[in-house]
Image (cartoon, rainbow, N blue to C red; front, side, top):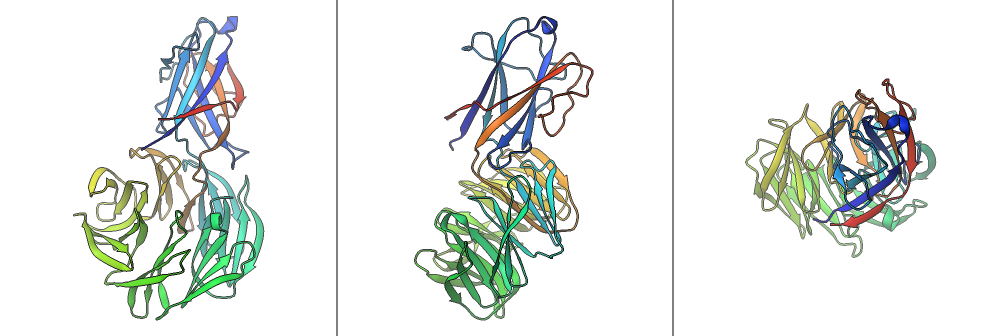
Length: 421
């Protein structure tokens, strides 16, 4: 697995009053989509769940570990600081309720903005090329820009009652799943490009998955004849389906196939129009959700309420207990983190199972989406705090003052270098 590393370097000129006085640093980052706030922060005054390393150097060539503690570290001459981050958290998390769309920080530590509406939206999807949000209500699709704040952008009249939406911004397409038809529409104007019919009609329990690699749409539903899973190939237009003896509760990618969960001990495989309902026996009580990112997979076992990371062939790497029953889990490419959603709590876990942040909310319909999956940081801010005493650990480090009795300074830099390892 290849990771991208970014180095942030800056020089410190020693002033007479700070010679030998312990100093510590806190950092906040903004990416290309989020200009007005720090998307997440790191500090030398604590152990950080997000992967990041702090160094100092006196000659610019040899670097030493900067200690992580409450007191800081003293310097007696000019020095250079370096912060190295692997695959930084990028984008935002969007939470939909019946009357609002909430924009949450990438590490799920805090809410950034709430868009209030009297329209009871029921579905949500995202154009990952622009971070525009698409929602549905009463025969219309509503589009919102999410740059900084959330603002209305346009609406599309699609007329038909809709069970599911998937936006493919890279191909300028939006998929609309209706009672007995699926429409592939132009994302710009909503015009129908192609429609697909099936029977019997959908009655509920719809799960959708967009394969971003090839544009194919996979969805499952309860129909008049039972539970079924469908696949529409973007380029060929091929429409295949198979029946299931169990309700399908989630879908994710597994190479060229699709992995599905049933709320039992098995994970199924859907490939070439055929569903294998006993593909993997996990030995767990009830696998209700499954998600994947490249060769890493994650499931939620609703029996003991455990979030589990596993690889193929099926082998569990780690598991963590969650506070409640999870109704959604999403693996994120930019930092290999996992976003989880329960009835009233949103969480972010690192690829090693460390909790990065959590956010309590109310009145959500249980839908959560990650924003851009491409890390593209344009600037970071750091704050130096001198003197003993723990730094105020705020969610953003763009502040120019500290609540402790020590003196502080603040600076901003956009210079960085990156390398692959």
